[in-house]
Image (cartoon, rainbow over all chains, first blue to last red; front, side, top):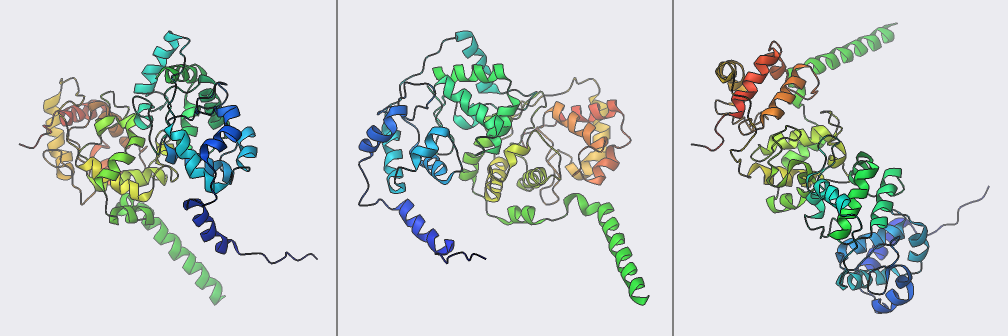
Length: 201
Length: 221
């Protein structure tokens, strides 16, 4: 019978982890350098990704970004690309990295179908009372600016919004029961219309 | 033998008290830990306003609700009533699948429920609620005085201490929908007194009294 080797108790590691998460390390790297070498290939050095499969990060609330970084690091939020990459970033660098991308200026998105965007606007501002879809504006703000709790949506790539909604729907992204419910209540057409409207915000 | 009898006796007594509890008139508002906690917490209206973002996608900015009755007006409702309804929804005591994901523990903390309730209670009730057709308001007034006013108040102000909701200023279509649901036994956390009061009402009675309520003045004189 194998015995488990005695290791440090998790309860003792927790305070250490908290200290690491909350104090800027003297060894912290320049966030611009991390952005350029680790993040830029997908998110762009200024946080305006050109590949619509990857989200724009520019201008997002830094608390929100920090929470996502930590969620990827802990495995609470999973993604094919991010889960591998996040392991290579020091948790001590997360706050500065989040602040760096938060300070970048977001470039507007591109609306390709104005009619679809108009449908999306109605849903975004008014929801769907029949299916119990709330107005997105309630949390994400009428202009899509979001805040520390709810992410900035304005100008985001359609493809990225659609992927997140699909991930919520499938349970792959299970970070928020509210969004899971909303993603299931929206029809495919409604989701597309919302993504189109959000791109133009 | 004696032991068995005693066990049986204990079982029967337990069953008896369980049945008594289920049938007890106080059961609709029996205490349970989260409700008790939320009622005892000190709310903060500013935090409540921020947390209400989660609710306003449906209940609208300013908690005005919708005249089509899809979502009730919450502005000006008693904090006690709001806390009871919110914790009842999220604990499954009030079946509301539409709202349930928005009241999830991962979405709202118990403290936020207290905060939101305090914020909503102080919001102004604007006199623009949806009203009925006006066809039978006199009958509605008679029914209200006879069966509703003793709990909901002559002016529809409700009773915070007794968890009776304020009804003045509520949308006609919401009053109608919920009254029909309560009469049908579909609102599980409803006061049995309410069921008794409207159990014998016909559809026209419920429409008339809902119409009357929707016309009660909302601003205090």
